[in-house]
Image (cartoon, rainbow over all chains, first blue to last red; front, side, top):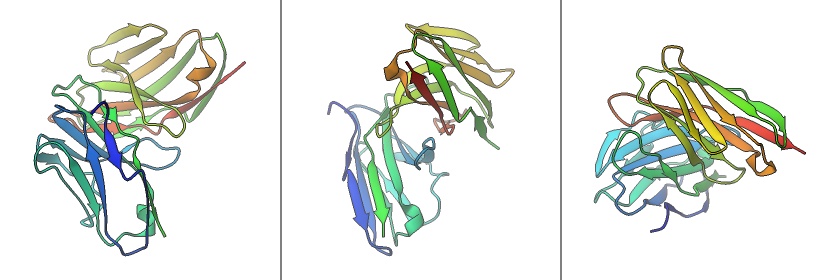
Length: 114
Length: 110
């Protein structure tokens, strides 16, 4: 696609429910990142994929959070048993291979847990 | 540990020059990025530095000193549309984990 696409754009869920957030990166981009961004703060690193391999998940807050990218393209971030503190903007970014390449961010999914 | 520091807010006048500083302490270094983020929008890439020195790109320039753990973003001929948050981000060695600072909100006034 023309850019990184995330869905849904907005998600309201009840505490205790599971949610799945989807990211469709730019076609051909090898690297995919998930970030969480609180209002007025910079993006907080969650996890990173190189093709289908999850190479760094050190930023996932706890074991309720998981991510996958089974075919090296679309990725899903899943939050189980959501809590109010999980409310935030979740952003996905992708980049071509190479350390100097910029990351292209999607518009994000605004998650609200009530 | 890892830490990136940048001022919370800055105000400047249209047509002027502003310098936004960033200092960092990270476990490894594999490049420094600057991103611009307008309110309610996604961050967009501005610049990348991996070697010491100044990189110039139009009205925007970015400087890096690895020995000092210091970078700055210089914006010239400020325009009202430059009002945004500016995010400093450092990529670690051994991978592509990129850590962002909290951002500097720049207000450009007439």
